[in-house]
Length: 117
Image (tube, rainbow, N blue to C red; front, side, top):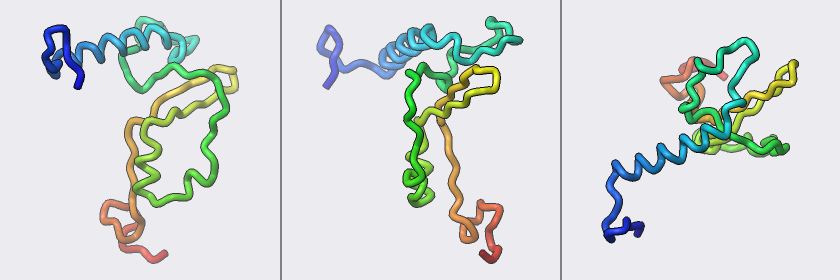
């Protein structure tokens, strides 16, 4: 169990403050990732957790990664980093923070609900 200097368990407020401090430091490290040559850097909100610092590596997900049930695939995609290299050479990165999954013709939320395969 994590405790503070007084031997007490940290409060939610102190844990959130520590998390915010870590994010602020992380944001200092990524201030170039979300920029565009025509964008005023002062207008970009770097507190957005969707932008992250990444080390350039080729860790593409394989075809077999996607060959899993819809619900587990959606859960597996959460937290993954989406990277796109533009024609200009600029690299955009963002963390997947939300995913939706539909179970096809039997799922009332799906556009294909009630249709034949």
